Length: 315
Image 1: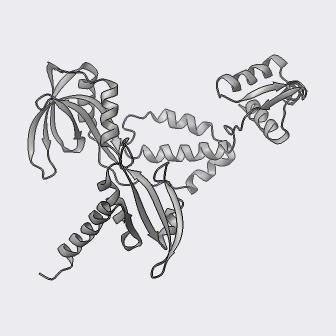
Image 2: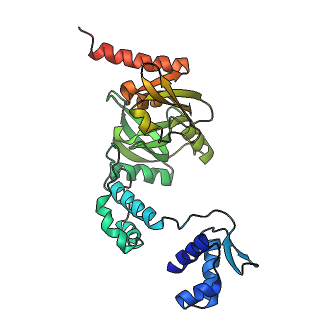
Image 3: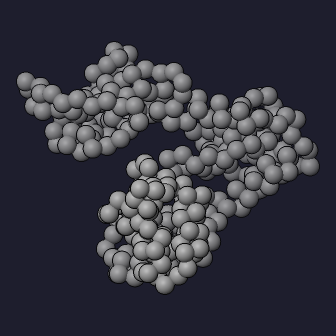
């Protein structure tokens, strides 16, 4: 809405906007302007209030909803269009949604769409038919008999009651109650070879609290209420990249210099699943070093030694 953006710009640039000012600019009634202001307050949560001695409206707190709106909408549109190219991320998205977002982008920004590229990391293909079966079972509280392959490809038959789906690092997982093992288990959808929805209903329904607790303790190198604080040292040229990254909202950074390897950046962050973090660190090769704690450093050293032994030692 052009009037809303005008009100916002006037407040940010001049510190105040009056009803009469907006009335004159857009040739609308005072009642219309007041409805706009009420919309900003109620629907957009703008901290807008009337200041009597200024005879106009101001922001009582910092507010940036409209700041760089066109840039934000442009990037959001590009982000979504790139995501829907991979059905694993947005398998059922309606392209009409994308079209409506595009309509909200200012015309002068549209030619820039082809000049911005958004790349997504690796992902696994999603079997939509399988997803639909599991989803239907979750909706109806039914059990699904699946043929599931382990990491070595060995199949086994499982009876599960789907409870939750999670997309994590390019892969889809189903969190389910295992009817045979009587516990919560995670199943990678790409390992499910066959699936048949049974007439049998699930024997137990998990609460949302149980599911969320399980997710917090299972997914992500940064999740979980407890964990260790890991110190990682990044040397140039990687340090110049990492110091601008956010791996965890509670991370801390400090810079230093090594007598042999030169300038570095140290990152300290709490970690719940060190194995996932080690994989991330090893991507940086010789430019990343685990400093502490000692047990995680030793795991890092062992991983390097095992790799060398496997591929570099003479047989």
